[in-house]
Amino acid sequence: MSKARGFLQEFQEFAVKGNMIDLAVGVIIGAAFGKIIDSLVKDIIMPIISFILGGEVDFTSKFWLLRAPEGYSGPETYDALTEAGAVVLSWGSFITVLINFVLLAFVVFCLVKAVNSARNRVARQEELAPEPEAPAEDVVLLREIRDLLRK
Image (cartoon, rainbow, N blue to C red):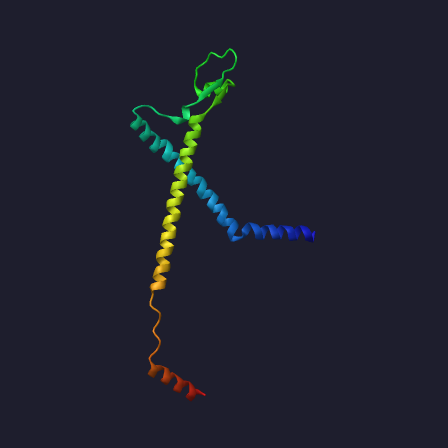
């Protein structure tokens, strides 16, 4: 019974440690940040690319049909083909995920660079802060006299 109690207490200490909670918060924020990047790519960047290329460009719908099911005569859309059991190479979806990753890495790089810059600025200000001046000689002498009188 005491081993189980010790194990549970050890687990509780592990789960409640600051590092574990920080990690959990980081994962939650990371998931939300991933949704923001997905929306940025899908709703902002892809329409701009479509506009620049002069047409309807949707990378997620780009694929190569490697093998259609035997006797398949339905529409040649990604959803219909995959539902019918076709072998489809979804290169457009991969391109979209790759763009998401590059954008996410770029944004994280910019954030880390900004945080490091702020830390360096604070460190420089601390280095440049003037040291407190040593008291004048007469003040030091008066303090020594005071201390001797106390004794």
